[in-house]
Length: 198
Ligand SMILES: Nc1nc2c(ncn2[C@@H]2O[C@H](COP(=O)(O)OP(=O)(O)OP(=O)(O)O)[C@@H](O)[C@H]2O)c(=O)[nH]1
Image (tube, helix red, strand yellow):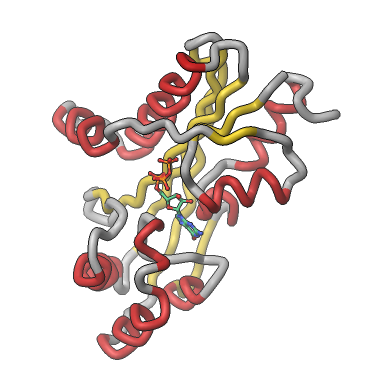
């Protein structure tokens, strides 16, 4: 069965290809901001928001390729006070996000939804907890000098596989979830579907 990753995320592409999974890529081209606003208006919990966005992406591509298994995904950063961070739109935005995360506990929810024939057939959400150090103004400046604009594509303003790891005193949960996919449950489902060998 053909697998399509409905994502423009380089980290998701890299995780799947490094795992030896054969897949095509099609960007879902959904209006995430509008979907997030509608979900926020109904008081949707952050992990459910990630799940809903992952489903929106998977179904959008599945409508174009109903015979393929389509994987949609979404990652959301939830601050300790429950507010959500989107990807930073500018260096100033990234600086603000880092200041708000400094010295706090942040949750990163990564959701995956599989669709077939324009219907969701599997879903999984995993959450990692990130304990952010107290970040000095000097650290934030030097960090952004090194990592902007590369982190513009990353919710939470970090690439944990790179210098972003310096933000954290501790992390709890799957490294893959932090990168953007609950990878092990995804691989398990691909085995049940015969896309991967058991
Ligand atoms: N490389 C890297 N990317 C991260 C990290 N944390 C979060 N991300 C990325 O942040 C992005 C979260 O935004 P999403 O809206 O879920 O996905 P996207 O990049 O817009 O791509 P789509 O799936 O097409 O929506 C994803 O691409 C994640 O892979 C990290 O530590 N390292």
